[in-house]
Every structure is written in C-alpha cells, then in structure tokens.
Image 1 (cartoon, rainbow, N blue to C red):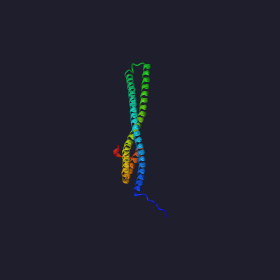
Image 2 (image 1 turned 45 degrees about the horizontal axis):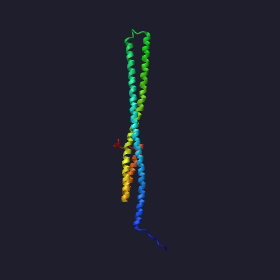
Image 3 (image 1 turned 120 degrees about the vertical axis):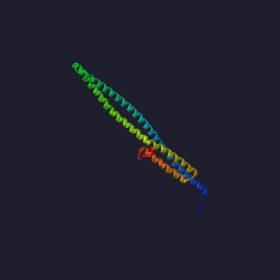
Image 4 (image 1 turned 180 degrees about the vertical axis):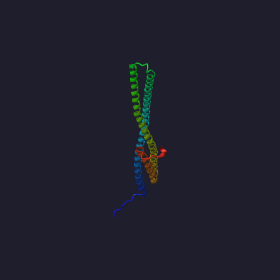
Length: 195
C-alpha cells in the first residue's frame, strides 16, 4: 500500500484561510459595485431634482408674465369699456365701432393669455411633482451608500480577523444597502424619517 503524506495542520489552516479570504474579497467587490450603483443613483436623483426645480421656477416665472399680460389686457379693456359707457351719447358711430373692435380684440388677448397660463401651470406642477419624486429617492441612496461602505469595511475586517461572524454581519448590512438602493430607484416603500 502506498503511503499518503498528510499536509501539516498549519498548512491546511492557511489554505482554508486563503479560500475564505478569496471568497470575502469577491463578495466585497460585489458590495463595491452595488455601492457604485447607489452612488450613481443618488447623484442622478440630486441632479434631476435640481433640474426639475429650476425648470419649475422658469415655468412659474413664465406663468407670472402671462398673468401680468392678461391683467394688462383686462385693464385696457375695462378702461375702453368705461370710456365707451361714459361717452356713449356723444360718440360718433365709426368711433364707437373702433372702440367696440378694440374691446373685442383686448378681450380675445385676455382670454388667450388666460388659457396659455393654464397650460403653463400644469407643466409647472408636473415639474414640481418630478422634483418631489427625486427628492424622495435621494435619502435612500444616501443611506444605502453609508451602509454599503460599512459593509465593505466589515468584510475587510473579517479577512484580517479570519472571522466568519463578522463576514456574515457585513453581508447582512450589505443586504440592507441593496434594499435601500433598489428602493431609491423604485420607491416601493417610504420610511417616514427619510422625508
């Protein structure tokens, strides 16, 4: 019978620790990828929130200019109507016709601006809603980033300490980071203290 040489216990322990370290390093790399996705999602949510806010502000300024023009036409129309009422008896028919024509034109412009501002208001509110959605997403990404960074540190400590419990703790913490990252994109649930 052939003799089988058994490796020394120290070498077996070293091989076991190397395999554990390799697995932990691979899982840590996966944590880092998820962290990058969370960071990108958070950056995009912030940019989209700021862009929507800027666009909503622009739309509200445009809305305000329409309101001012509508008021201007309304005041001019009212002034002409007052003049017409005041001078009705002494006004020549062709002048009266001109007044009535101008009043009608001013009324049409007033109506046009009133209708245009309604569309602008709808767009402004839509942009504000978009801003709020992105504002709601951002905290989930922020907390996901923090939790994933903690899990990466804990996984690194588990390699140094060759500790499986610490590694399992890092996996649990990373799982929370994954859930928060997914929720940042999908908004499946809302945590009240994030808003």
